[in-house]
Length: 119
Image (cartoon, rainbow, N blue to C red; front, side, top):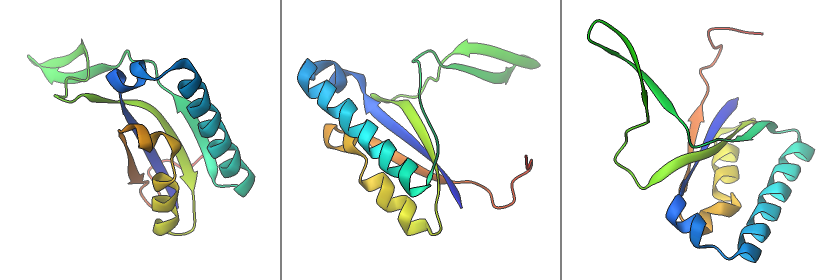
């Protein structure tokens, strides 16, 4: 089963890391991703540029705004998709994400079984 892992972080925390600490964390995340590639569980991993936009219905039609406008100090900084046999494995992977020790979180979202579009 596939799971979307949304990695949340706090920009204020990331910006206070010493360059050597940030480089070490990036190296750890690379090793984390490499291990998931080797196990065959990593489907995709991408960082996100903090330029999200939101499309919502307003005034009778879709309106595009800068966003998201969540009242939160954390933002989605990256995501990865894994394909694992059991739910507990997805949770174990999320719990082992190296960036957790700097705050933030990893949300674990199971894909719909069967999905709408199969390619």
